[in-house]
Image (tube, rainbow, N blue to C red; front, side, top):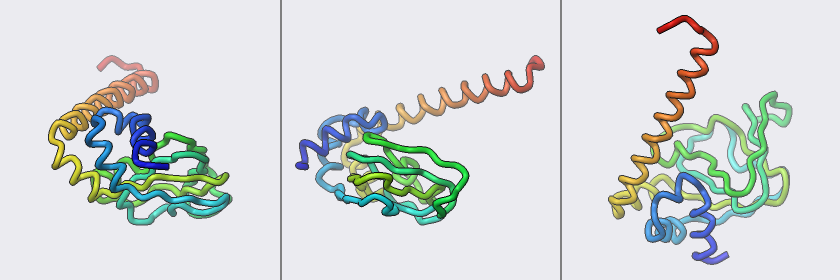
Length: 154
């Protein structure tokens, strides 16, 4: 895949779609491609998280803990951004990601992402607005769930 293909992949990820093509070009140029075989671990729960991964193709099982028998598991497929929070701040991986089929990811380091935001202030504003809107939606959703669980007037 070339740079234009990587930009197209990035444009399909909601978190990145707001940034604009030039900012995405910087990310695509600096990103690393990685191919994984079935059963290969992309990262383990508890690992230091210094990057996000976009699944270009394939799928990953996301499990709590580091074992195949972990109770909680979800499948993430093409176009999914794994480790979004790691793009913005120091954190650790909350889950283990294991390829369930031959897969390819695009790795974007936190350093690259933050430098891109510094170089493209308009992208940084768009990202801030996008995150603010998501936080507002999440707070509203939590409030609705809270009202369902505890219907007392507030």
